[in-house]
Image 1 (cartoon, one colour):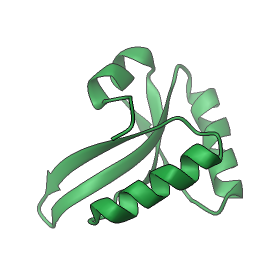
Image 2 (cartoon, rainbow, N blue to C red):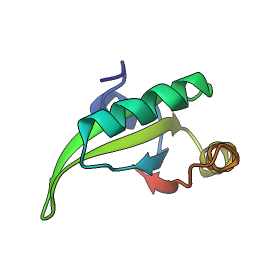
Image 3 (tube, rainbow, N blue to C red):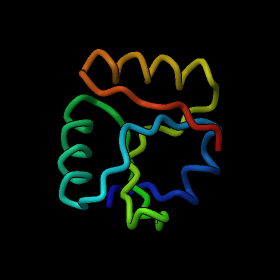
Image 4 (cartoon, one colour):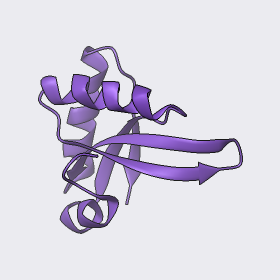
Length: 87
């Protein structure tokens, strides 16, 4: 898991970009490594869903929606479509 946790992330900013939520922890780790190499600050959250465990891969947090949208555009330019999430 990256240095940030959901609790510390929500205190530091109001928005994050969720890059993916794979079922595989390995897939989440690989995406985190790829995003870190791209210069993103990432963290993961393990969540239980009705479809089983998912590993949310998020970037941020960002203080403003505008900053999060800029990060989302950068993410998209690297081939990953993300969703903006308000915390």
